[in-house]
Length: 209
Image (cartoon, rainbow, N blue to C red):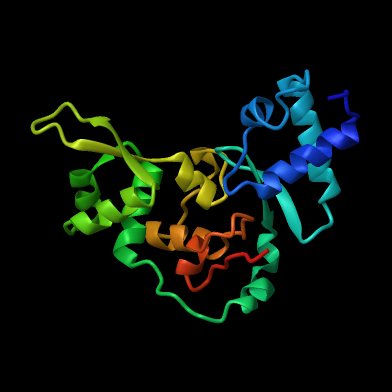
């Protein structure tokens, strides 16, 4: 195929990210839709920046997450866009939010350490659910008696909550762990994947193209 100009490269990148059901990294774009072109990572990053600028004044934006780039609606528009979905799904339990928040803010952390902070036992179902969602994983075992598993968050967790890295989590002040994560979840932007994950919280929304 003949060499394309920057505008055509941008169109390919834009279409690929929009069509994908998951965030796309620069590396993945180079390995797939841009494989036949002699482009560098720096060049692709510059092209993506241009696409982002094109959406500056639009209702959707191209954002960088832990796993790559994706299109999503601006979180400031959620109160109106969410009216498209009238059904209300149950919110996550406070126990699950507290467990997730403790893992996110104090990782790596053991189940026993979570229970020590919360003052109650952690349900096995909560841990199982967080793992099944791909939000937390075991990254090792603490070198103490019994070698308990060490839990940490995943890239999927960062992607879902619209974060590039764990350092992007809001700083804790006087808000407790559960309220902090619930606040993040309630402002979760709408991705272009068409998945219904964000509808599981009554404050969240999902997208229909």
